Image (cartoon, rainbow, N blue to C red; front, top):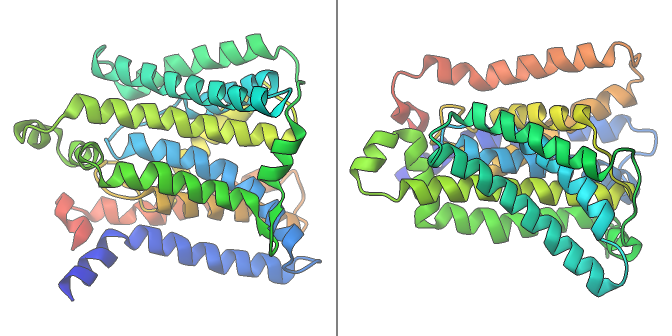
Length: 326
């Protein structure tokens, strides 16, 4: 019984984000002209999964009490790179996919090396590297364009048997193959310990450097998967600073909505996923209710501010990190 209470307390943020998403999405489809069908669900999932992947990327760094301001630019760089090399035969396209993922992993590894060995603050380091990644994206795609293997793109963005959006399978695979093994590993537990108290983690003899490095590297990897999926959806690449900045800021908002503590040491990528889906559903609701496009950013910002404030309210009252699980 106490284990169940602890599990609920530990995952309260994720559960609240899940419930909020269900309520908002139900409200959305009930007022959508077409109702809930496979096409509506696929369109919503395609948009939501992009932010969900970037929010997961942000989660890896946030649990170590850091902030990665480069995730949006890694996302954009991966999009531009994929539109250049994920082309040709199936074998050539798969080599291109591997190249995009390796590039994302390298970007995250560079961030981690600067934070760990360069002893730079995460915000400063990732702000600088984000500018570099955007410069590389602009070099690759000075103007929007490119292409991608259409068969592979259709397979990953269309529907599975039963009308299930294929991108949800991609998201589930990322959770199963990346997040869960990380969460259960020694380095994953160390990352949480760093966020809770880096000094205590050091005194306990935990591998702090390796854990931080892995967290940043996986952050870059997941951001590149998001950029790859964007290429599959748009069949092109675009070096847009606005897109990169928007995804970076929304990823931070999504992790807070999903119950991930900005102080580090608490939260889950699962919660960040539902936080991202909540943000996307807000935009869909504004579209369904035909809000004036000039007022939509203001209204969306007010809703986002209120949601993030509510999500952070418990942190303001917290006197001890153990209160998170009380």
